[in-house]
Image (cartoon, rainbow, N blue to C red; front, side):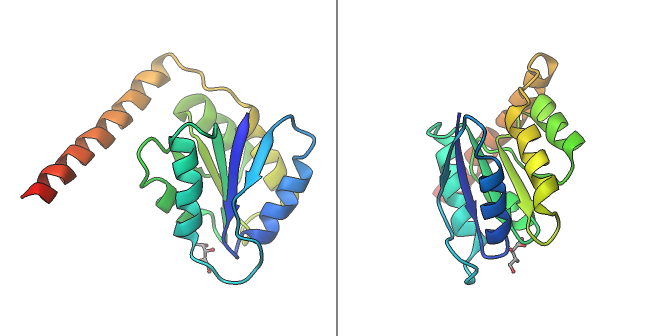
Length: 157
Ligand code: RB5
């Protein structure tokens, strides 16, 4: 499994701690920045990871900011992305099993490194259940496609 990772300054330290603690997993993590606690704009980093996951180059993404929220809002603007902010293990397992979520976001000002490690493991190691849940994902995809079509028509007017 290949996992694209990024953070802004608010999530930088949590990202570093989580990546270090997940190093025992047979997963190829690639960190696309940022590289310090100097202030940056989280949408720039959400976009990098979202594009890499949406294109299929990476299987999943991990994004860290102060709250996890801005990263999720930004990543979800990319078609095919189902980014979720999760800070508990039950939701991490449930969102993988039911929503086939492909990006996990967490907040460095919200959660400690120990729990974040457990949440990330649950997210990365829980498979999608498929079945009736796939039908529901397909409906989300149809909503994305319809919305893109509307934007195209609006742009051409
Ligand atoms: C940066 O101060 C902060 O707004 C950002 O890390 C994130 O929490 C946004 O949602």
